[in-house]
Length: 293
Figure (cartoon, rainbow, N blue to C red):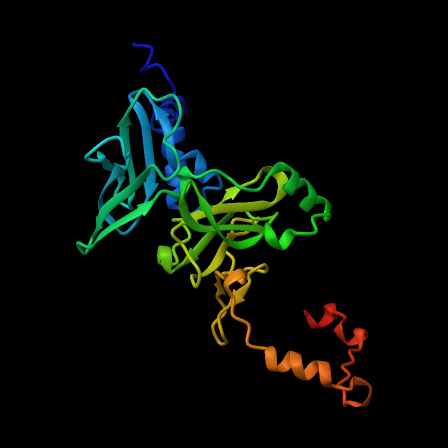
């Protein structure tokens, strides 16, 4: 009797399960496609492979795609075709190169066609670095960062000559946070954000997203539950009711229209003007467990 045939059914079943277990690479892809991946930079963007650099991206609406390296010293541009590793839209393009470092942010774009034959060209968000410093995270964690509004929220920014918007939000109990909006068809799997260690802060730079873009955050809760979409508490603008989306805004370019009110305010005698007083009884805000509120 052979050693294999002498194994018990339970041992044989265990051995078969081990052989069929997905690799770490496949497990990361599965988590991304299921909206469960909390470390998107661990699978997306440029990564070293045996023959150079593998550039991975997830675009569900893409039927085909390629990577175009726009190096002024090289004409025409270098092109690396991408292989669709998963039918859901997970691609990998291998750039044969001896370069020891990853391609520079903004040095390449993703070109492709949708399932409807429409062409598109976008930068890879996962080729860009983080922007919040360790000192920022330290001060925010202590509650002593007095310019938090300049760090969290949505801010127009230019990285490596590419204009876009950097997003940051504090969600310490979240398993995954994503930016959703028209730019990704409100699909939370497309732009998951980078977690910054144990700080509870998530951040991501989205190239070519400018003023006026409507967005929200999609959050996977601590128990793996998908929460309702959340507006940005640090947003500079928001949609007009009944819509509730946050809007990327530029305070420096905002045109104020309150000059008439400011002039009237200087001429108002506030001591003789009517005022409105609001009062709240704190006791009425207490919870009553018996009423399940």
